[in-house]
Amino acid sequence: MEEHQQTVLDGIDPEITERLVSRRDAIRRGAAASSRFAAGIAMASVPVALAALAKESFAQTPADIVDVLKFAFILENLENEFYRAVLGTSAVAAQNNAFAPVRALIPDAAKQAIQQIQKHEQQHVDFLKAVIPQFGGTVVTITANDFDFTGGNGTGAGPFIRATTELDFLLLATQAFEDTGVRAYKGQAGRLLINGNDNADVALESALRIHSVEARHAAKIRRIRRARNPADTSLRFSGYVRGGGIAAAGAGNIANPPAEVVAALNLIYGGATPESNTQHVVFNGTSAVMIDAATLTGLDVIDATERTAAATQAFDEPLTKDEVINIVKNFIKDDPARGLP
Amino acid sequence: METREEPGRGEPLVIARAGDLMFASTRRRFVQRLLAGGAVMMLPSVFSACDGSDDGNDNPLGPGTIPGPVTGVSFDLRSDVGIFRLVHTLEQLEGAFYTAVVASSTFASFSAEEKELFVDLRNTEIIHREFLRTALGSQAVPDIRGSIDTNVLSTILSSRTNIVNTARTFEHIGVAGLNGAGKYLQDARNLLLAGKFASVEARHAAALRDISPPAGQNANTAFAGDDIIDANGRDVKLEAGAVLTRVAATGLLRSGTLASPAITAAPTAAQGVPSADFFPANP
Image (cartoon, rainbow over all chains, first blue to last red):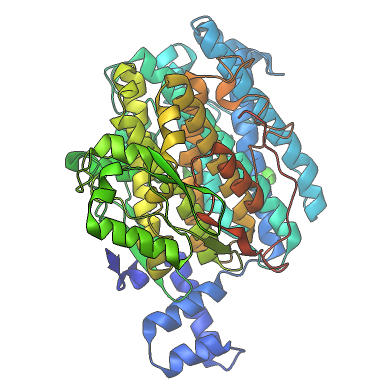
């Protein structure tokens, strides 16, 4: 068994650790502590106490729900308007015109897939728009004019401009948007976990169900890209994300990718918990343990040279909200009134 | 293959490996188990695949000795551990299934693309299985490979269509089950872990529908077809009881492997309340 108890400390991200510390201070000041904290502290068992604190410190508030849903709404609009521009169905003529060259290059089969994906993004936008007010939130107004799909923050000439003229570049950008969506939802799910709050459960379940649809989209685009580049085994027929950073993007068929695009892909498949990560925390009811999926026993049937790659593929990883904002900020024109970035 | 009636249960006891009963020790175990209340099941294709050898290396279900059948597996869903035990059961079934697929003679006729896909599927499910076994420790579900109905398995393995259809079913049960279970988890780290599994299962599900769409589905949109995505753009979802019903319907798990009822305690109201399922007859 490859359990590393010590990583109870290492495995919790810094933000949570900060909250642990503040929670600990609260306890020290005499705030209510559950018997579990008290027992853990009394035994001077640091891991047990920390684990118990971590569990209770994750408590979220209903405000988190609205924040997560509004964040998702902006990202879904970004995706939806991107696909509408690609397909030529944007309400803004300039967006349609920008993608006209690449649109003419999209084979019909891929176009049908993109239309299906766009339909889902529109459904996600509409769903979130309907749901946010039910949680007391206000839906911000977003139009196609708010986006710059070249990643130029309004210049229309950002590093992703080749997506408007090159099919492989467009498909790479599409995959990157979808994988960012998967990672963004995964990173936010914990903020929708409010024990004993049925409304939060509803939001969480819908978010999880949207999250897996985004993963389907990403897998399909990866398969389309692999079919166009059969030798590039970093693009799996299984639709998996293999490895992390630029290697996980499967950008090998993009000639001379701009440095800014490489940097963006390193963010999209990297981050504090990069896609190459093989170590995952689980709370088993008593303590949090970190387990390395690459060195488990019982993997005999998997070729030894494949185990690490397989372990990276077997788990998709989250992005934090800040990481997502850092990725998408240049695709969304600056507008403080809109709230993001 | 011989069949005998198992005393007290009325279900036929299948003796997989005729040669086993040539060994006094096996006969003894056999009789002892019968007397102990009928937890015995012997597997037909273990016989054919292993030809009486005990090392199990030729066994389609994987290397090493396949342990005896497991019975009475149950789930108390009032804790994250209980929920992950159910996931562990699914991952075990998937891991055993894909291991058998890759080892099957039918697999040899797969295209290079399909071979890569199924080896990836196998590797992932084995890693999920072993990860959860490690994570759950003493509460892990015992190795259930010996509880797989190898008659049913052999039938599935006999054709590419059956293999792909079964794989699609499993992956969709996996996605739907995880999507339904998330709200009952109580610890955010465990929810994150479930999310890490779920999107990978969704990638599988999409890839399998892409190579083999269900009847009537557009091949270009089947990866996320209108039959599996609802009008709000949301994926399949099942409550735990429905997950087990779907698993049972595959016929791969011998009756008795799971306790009846398998779910001994549902999630509490504080964990969450059930919601409507969304799952087509043929995902």
